Image (cartoon, rainbow over all chains, first blue to last red; front, side, top):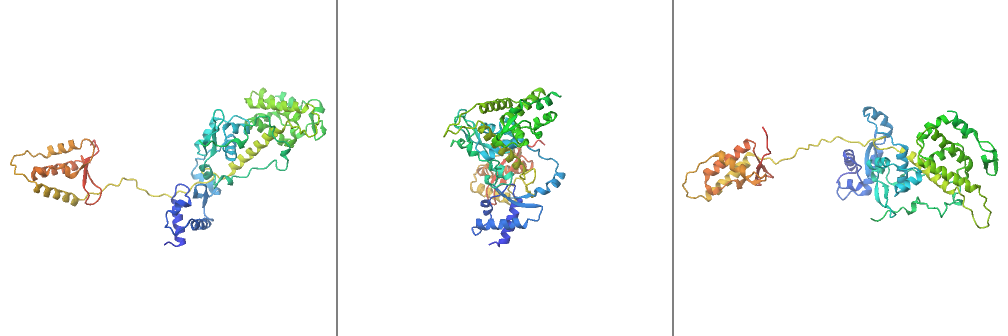
Length: 200
Length: 272
């Protein structure tokens, strides 16, 4: 039977050696039954605390726990590793935001919100990054694909779930919008309420 | 070059400029003016008509829920016009939006008698809703971009782990071969015939025989290569043939664990 501090050391070794975020369920396999998920969670928190002052931090994302460098040191690390990833254009970022906050959405929904055509290039970049994928098809003519964000997206942005997305800025909060509901007779295909993924 | 400047100064009859919350506006606020030379740069950065409209609204500090349609439409049209004169690629969406603005403007100009209980729909409502939703997403995009991003702002920690990828092959000891050979001899002894014929014993010949047997590429059990019934001399020659083949790297002998049977197969073709 391992002492808690020994368990912690094993956790540390496993997480440092891991190539991907490791969930607690996976970490649990290293130990006998006596180490429960709650204990592991507590020990991981302690471990996170212990690494607080280091150049590397222990973080938890959607897929589990991982060691990562601190963003504040990135500017130094880039000097020895100069291949810097290009920043995404506004078109890519706005498309990503709409998919993240309004998912599942079709390309038509995205175009309605942005008011411009969504280029295939933009969708391809997000798909290639593994941040979005098709989760179904909307049961309307043409059966357009419904897009959603992936676990990789959450992992890469250090989020545990979509609930941790930055809250939408309520610009209209002080202004009473209920006085002016959208006109009923006009078709409003961008109503997100109807965008349910088909069970196909 | 001076044409667009004229455009933004040209204003229709002062009464039409705007009626903001009941108060007539006869002049455009000065902060609404953007030098047209800067437009080319601007248009590159606009993400479409909604973006442009938002820019105009926010720049002019207009209450988005009470947009002065005449003024906004006029401003918008100026931009579109400049885009056309500068031969900038004008996306169709900009023209669609222009038509929408005109339509809203004209609907607002129509007199609508106040009917009790009948709440008139503000023609601007749909536009406002879209503008607000777009602005929300635009800001959300900026926030997403500000989040630390794996690969851009931070890196996963990777500890170098030495991992040998060489295939692990079973070890064959000399004693194992000896053991196998002894077992064969015992079997040969037990089934000895009293056949006294002279046999031409050629190691080379047996080598060929073995090779031919194994030509298919499969494994054969070590023991199956021998025919104990043919007597010890044949066995010995056969065994020598096996050893010779191994020595010449034509044959591979493997054993999965101690005391397990040997398996023999052709070694991969080695050109040297």
